[in-house]
Structure formats: C-alpha cells, structure tokens
Image 1 (cartoon, rainbow, N blue to C red):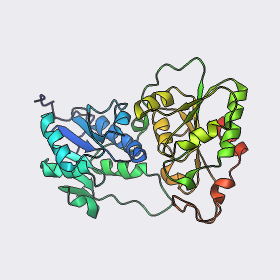
Image 2: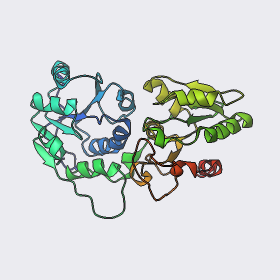
Image 3: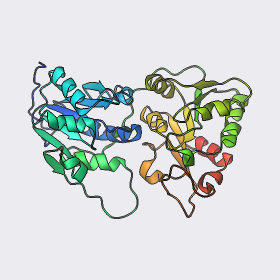
Length: 335
C-alpha cells in the first residue's frame, strides 16, 4: 500500500475541501471534455501540492492524461468496461482513496460509489447526485455564452482551488521539433457531416502547402477517416495521410507547427500540446467549445440557423459554404 503523504496544507495553500490525501478523478468520456477538464486538475494540483491525484480514464483518452504532469497516476480501463470491472481495478490498485471527483455519469463514477469512497464530489445534477456524497452547486451568471472550461473551473473553485489563473492553462513541454516544420490538416470530423468544410477547399489549402515546399504536410484521418483519403486523391506532390492511435497522433501534433481542421475532437488535443490551431466551425458554438488558448483561431460564419448543434444539416450547409479559403489562410497567418 502506498505511503500516505503529509496532508497538512502549506501557508501558501489553504486546505481544499477534500478529505484525506488520495483523490480519484473520473475522466470525462469525450476527448474535448477531457481537455476542458485539464485546467481544473491543474488547479487542484497547484492548490493541493501534498495530495495524490489519480485519474481513471477510458483507454481511448488515456494517452491525453499521460501528457499531464500534474497528476500522479493514470489508471486505464477498457472503453466497454462495466462499473464492476472498474471497481475491481480500483480494489487491485491498493490505493486508499479518501475522496473522488466525478464530472458526469459514467461507469467510473458508478464504481467510485460502489466501492464506497468516503467523499464523492460532483456537480449538483440529478444524473450525478445518485453517485456522490456531496453535490456541488455551480451557478453560471446570466449573460453572453461562456466557454465550457468554466464548468470545471467553477467546480474546483467551490472546493477552494485557485481556478482562474494562468498557471492552470500552461501547455506541457514541447518535444524537439523537426527540421522541416509540419502542417496538419483535418478534413473530417467525428462531430458529424455538418461540421465538415467542403473537401475542395481543403484541397486548395493542401496543394498550396505542398507547392510552397516549406512545410511537410500531414492529412490526419479522424472519425470519418475516408475523407482524408478522398482529399489525398485530389492532390499532387509529397504529403502523408496519418491514421494512427492517439499516442502517435499526440506525438505528431506536438511536433507540428500548425493545424487547420474542422471542429472535431483532435484540435483540442493539438491545442493542449501547444500547436497553433485554426478550427472551422459550423453547427457548434465557438464561444462555448473552441480550443483552449489565445493563439488559436475559430472561423465561423454567423447565419440565422447557427448554432444548430446538428450532426447533419437539413438545409444548404450555408454556415460552412460561406467560409472562404482566403479567410482560413488569413486566420493562420494571424497569431
């Protein structure tokens, strides 16, 4: 059994509303949401340096958490694992968890309850309350749309963490960059067809990168990966279609200079590792779900029906059709 660390707060860090010294955190089950929760985890670490933070993650997201140095351990479970399976994983870890945080209803949040971790905190929502011992009520002020990251930061602020500070938004250290800088294109989207910019316009940008010769071009297959291969058939010259697991994808993104792509999960990973992103938004709301970081650009054409949040456009896809190549390239040049 791990040795219990000193639990007394230091003068610079008043005690958080966490019991004991070992915290289990259930990762959100979607990549974008997991990225949005990272600053909150950093806030806990920065305000609770003596504690041990363990993140429980479905396997398709675990490589993201492996890049977050503020956590002590990542425990991975199968994407199809039941709460009983996760309960057994927790028991076999031999870690004496005193407290837990859950952001949403998931097999991990159920497992935390089933093994009776003494203090289980989560947002005060009906679908989560049945798995927690202490619901935390977070109330957003009425006003303009605010970024989703606030959902997580306001929660940990209620626990006593210093949430809205720049240290919580630091990206991991960048690895050594290749001699030839890289540009990554994401022509597909795992958010549905309505989130996809016309493939012919991606082809114009891709061919321009190839012809310019100053960058290596990678076309990232994601979600509906066939779109990457459709784009590749429209191009002439040197480029690579990249279709690997998340660990290799994170390595590619962290060694790339820029990404141009549709609103999808992987631009959030790219932003997390510090790669400049230009993300083309259609049915989604960028003020709510744009990648985190000031150097990233969200391209969006405000039309009467947006944001519709639909997977498939029932009209003429005008939110995407009206975004020009020139506008996307101009955004890339503005940092």
